[in-house]
Image 1: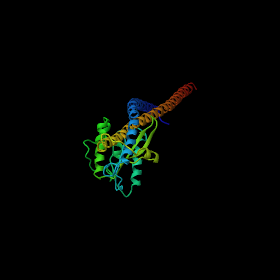
Image 2: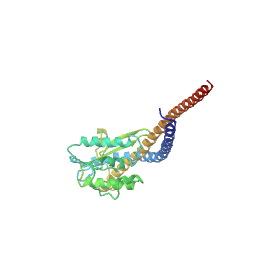
Image 3: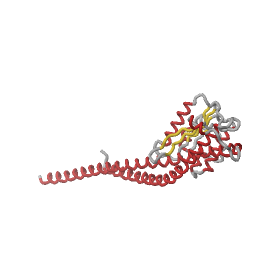
Image 4: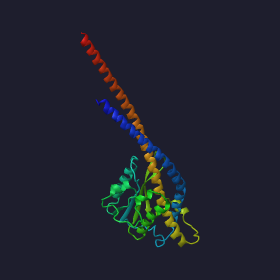
Length: 292
């Protein structure tokens, strides 16, 4: 059995840890509110824009729609999106596992991984899949320091340029889509080439467009903007999911620390009572020995 001093030290240690996890939970809750509002407001617009993009791309010729060209997937780019920090449960490990599954599925192709987030970058650093060089003006991990459309557009534009130059034949996003504070859905989404509408009904609705000011302007302006918006939505989803996952993880950690403190205090009180009882017995035994 542990001594009173060891139990007392452990109570102090667990109490300090509980204060830290409780503070982190409160910080994540505050950040989650802002991130959740951003993704909830943006999602309907991004989804509708993605629908228009799919319908429009399916009506273009191969020469017109460079981002909808279906090629044999010899060179595949996977973009896993994680967080820069840990302590958020299985949030980051799920993205890493799904990325590894995609690598297995595309065996026979040349795989490149462009990591967005320090945790997934650490997982693939030094592997044959890590990207060897990038034309980005800044490191992809820095996008989360101040998440905005301009910063995400730099990454999206570089990826789109690489696809247009046939450096990659297929681009896949892996990220956690935000549902609520407790639930994040791991999502695998094809970024490029743009997929046609999924169902026959949607393709029949999508057919006839009147282009204003003209088809060329739409192709050169709307499609790149839609792709950048799709990428920004994935980053926003991941950002909100990170804070939801961290808040949930820290809440559970605080509850566990509270339960552990109760058990330790009970154990401490029992050990203290036993020590006091032993001291009393020793005093009584000594007194009786002197009287006897």
